[in-house]
Length: 152
Image 1: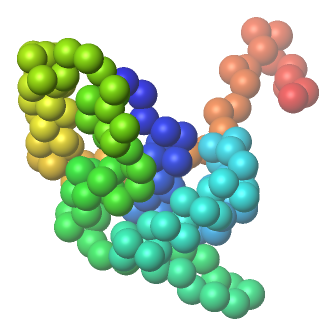
Image 2: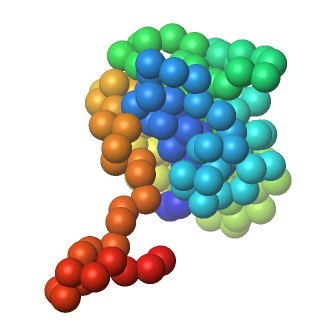
């Protein structure tokens, strides 16, 4: 199972905003920090704002901030708000044509696994993911042994 990049970017944006809670963060800055598409991140930010996880401040000095305290944002809530589909197999979605669905035991096992996954994320909040803002800085190259500065 793999989450969409939309979900991945949603978590990254929320972590970045939570780790910089003393100021507004911008789409441009976040996109540059993570080397991701500004346009895609804009869609993520809009969805997170609609869901109440972020608040947007418009204008020249605008940006994004958390819409509620990080300890009130459960990871499961974020995932359920931004992930479009949890159909792990054909039998979970509409248009199921699988011949063995009425007798199949895999659906029950996958359903229990999905429930456990969501329940695990429910035990964590955004506050559990907050990092020091310096963690988002681009690492500098190590010093050269001869003491000369390296050019990057």
